[in-house]
Image (cartoon, rainbow, N blue to C red; front, side):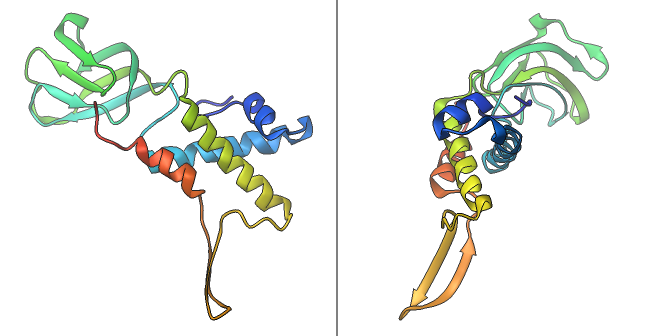
Length: 181
């Protein structure tokens, strides 16, 4: 499983009843579906180690671009490593709070740690599997219409377009864009 993937090959294989000879394609589709999910959610979803360089608005808090935070390895203010007693973390919301104000400026804070869901929630796994399933049918040329939207007027097709992500999956990913807790 690649970093950032929302579901494993084994889980997709079991749910979709796939054969081992499809593993390479399905792993590619899992990675693509996971990337689409993160674009829609506008944040990282699956856990990963990360280094972030962040700007400061001059306050005592910095919102990390992704959450939840699983652990912090190190935090730097400018080039100085901060001791853990000089900051705290609201992990579920990804809010880093400092004991003292951070001077306003670019690249004021460097955060090193692990961000994202571990384990990945079931709804995210299911939504990723749904995208994989839709793409397998689409690429197989089996005549499936998953992802196709047609509008007709008096029996004639006036508009036909392809939906990039099934709406049920998109709604799951959109729900992860909600406000921080």
